Length: 208
Image (cartoon, rainbow, N blue to C red; front, side):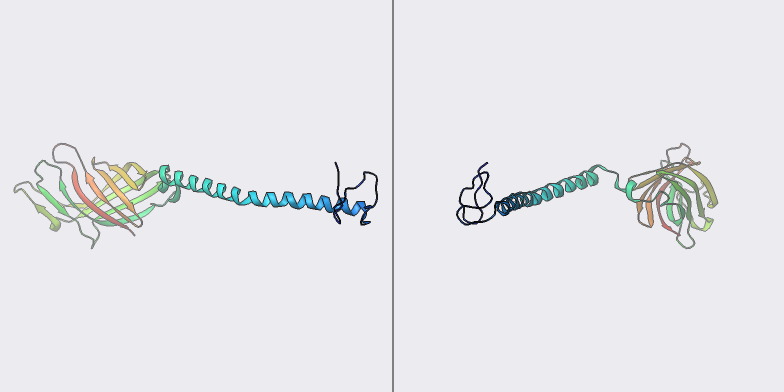
């Protein structure tokens, strides 16, 4: 490959030790040429880096988009035992007759509904307690003998967290469906049992 002097530009002979025109040493000329090649390659590499950075940014944004679109976010961010502990609040229920005969008006003071929860992943266990004294029971249809709940406690079973919703059943056949809102649980209780044996209504609970 023909080389030229980096000092004056004259073509060099293959076996020459100096430039015949300006006298610059051939070793110095070779070194200058090698440095020029390295500089040229570095310049090309530098031009590619911004492109790679842009591609990387778009890749990361794509992963974030897929994550937030399709992933169960609450399953990732909520701790394994995030609902564990005591929850208390109020509820207003009727019995589940076609024409409800009794209304149970629970209050916050003292709390009328208690949940003692133990979370393990997406499964929840524990107990539910309803405490509505006779003074807070309204008779909607006379002669039905409506009575209150004196610390009626039942085991929770089939407790499942799906997204931001907790659902479980108690031994009375009542199905609880509660939205998880930070330190609040709000939702409904329903029951399809015949004979007016179950409850239906609204409930709101806070972490104790």
